Image (tube, rainbow, N blue to C red):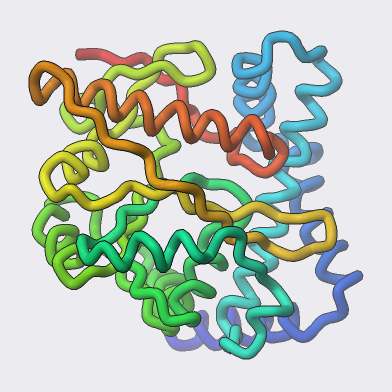
Amino acid sequence: MKIFLSKIFLFFSYLVHISPMFIQKFLWWWLGFLWFDLLRIRRKVAIDNVERAFPNLDKKECVRIARASLRNMGRTIVEFNHILFYDNSQFDKYFEFENEHLLKKYIEMNKGVMTLSLHLGNGDFGITAMSGRGYSMNLISKRFKAKWLDEIWFGARGKHGTRFIAPRKSSFDILKALKRNEFVAFVLDQFMGPPLGLRTQFFGHETGTAFGLALFAQRTGAPVVPCYTYRRDDGKTIICTEEAIVFEQKDDKNQTLQYMTQKYTDKIEEIIRKYPEQWMWIHRRWKPFND
């Protein structure tokens, strides 16, 4: 059954991959419409989140941003079919680097690089492209329970060299990757409560954010470099890199972790404010933080 499901999945994925762009656009528009307007899965969560983040916007504009976010996710689903059949020679068709020189600058420090990222644009496709271009990428990511789906999803993302690190008990693998002078991607835009999270402010509201990135930055001295994707109007996905975030020591270890985790969270917020239609607003980011 697993082999049968995999072959059916791959067959339809290939059909999407080779289909004309107008069909692909229709598919991602329809997925967003189905999700947001018909089935209304987490529609209220998305709208409430946008209203919480942007209290000065009227209801109509908040709904527009939430709807665009779901259509962006529909596009991400369609683009996953390209990951399955992506070839390195297709980079210029789908991608463009912004500040690629910074990736080279920080890897030359020979401490490894920790990238600060978020669910914006299409990060899975972006990290596949980076691996294909010769960057040694490690992504901290949960796995699927369905084995056939896990093999397809992670197999597609990993066939160009991306390695995956489980979130739990990951310290050893992260330190090994940094020692090999590789990139380790931390996706820091989701809620994390205690004991792995710290109380932070996000768009002016209390939430919880994982402090692991700050801990490894403190322990290793490896640079933390914002690196994320966003979609441009011409259809290309831009892989954007920014200058490393300066690490600042405070009076004690706990204050340092608190301060730097908030600093990383502020950067995530800054990026989302630039491209609000492309972030994943359906996530329940503002859960109660219970110590």
